[in-house]
Image (cartoon, rainbow, N blue to C red; front, side, top):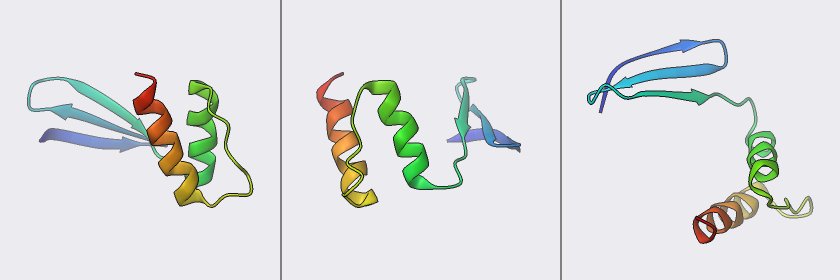
Length: 66
């Protein structure tokens, strides 16, 4: 549960009940965010596949490579 949060530009800054600070980036489109994450973790987005399929495969890839 979040104690408090604020939005600044493209970021959400949250202070959790435990005192932990979390910062999340807000993306304008889903496929753009998937491309950025995929590049960071070494996953190749299939441009011919739909967003839902790419997102699902990216989550599986990340979980398999933890």
